[in-house]
Length: 135
Image (cartoon, rainbow, N blue to C red):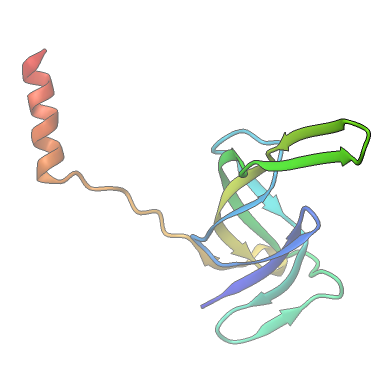
């Protein structure tokens, strides 16, 4: 199983194809392809390549699934004996991405995600037929 270690948003992530993860917010549209060029380590079944600090020419491609908010963190300030209090809430924004390709030097594909289409089951087909008949 091949994987890579990338750096984005000041953090390092171990990624493999088809993996879904939340990273710091990226300014891109939903469904857009994002390319991470700061690859620190590449590993496939045969060998491991370590960068110093990063591997030149290697990249990881991901698809932006959504931009979401984290849970609320309460920020409370109180000054003793002054009747002064302040309460704020904060929700950090994250980007949810899915790793599609891991590319080595020269654009050679190490691993690629397999896109699986959902097949309609008999139950969903019957529901679709009933909706059409009601109209």
